[in-house]
Every structure is written in structure tokens, then in C-alpha cells.
Amino acid sequence: MSRLSPVHYKKFDQFLKYIGCEFVRQKGDHRIYRRADLKRPIVIPADKDIPIFVIRNNLRLLGISPDEYLKILNEL
View 1 (cartoon, helix red, strand yellow):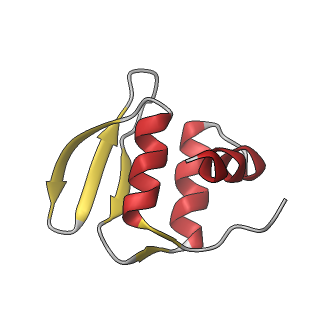
View 2 (cartoon, rainbow, N blue to C red; view 1 turned 90 degrees about the vertical axis):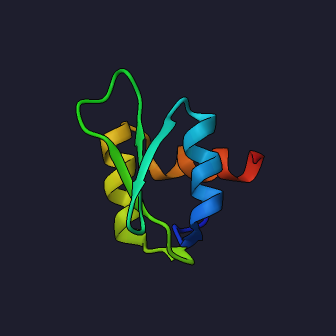
């Protein structure tokens, strides 16, 4: 599989909705998502591209491997 790269926040939004997260609110340029089985909310910046470290941190919270993330992203 290819390596992680920055992705537009709308594409990451599609990914989050695909795996069952729901958009809760937006405060400034930060979009907040929740899922029932998560202890912490998923927070992404509503910026042009989401940096790799933000993607990695959120994948860790979700319990999804980078390879699985890339596979899902290619399906969308």
C-alpha cells in the first residue's frame, strides 16, 4: 500500500461518516465528530489539507490501521 499523505478535510469527513462517526458541531475551524464506542471525540481542522500527524492520531483513536484507512479511502 502507499504511504499516508495529507488529505482534504471533506474527503476525511466522508471517511468518518463511512465508518459510523457523526458530525456534532464546529467551533472555529475545528470540526468535531462522535461515535458511541469512542471515549474521546474526533477533531479535525476545517483547513484545506489535514496534516499526516492529525490523520495518524485520529486513526489511533478509531483503532484503524493506516493500511485499512487507505483501503477505505480508495473505495470512497
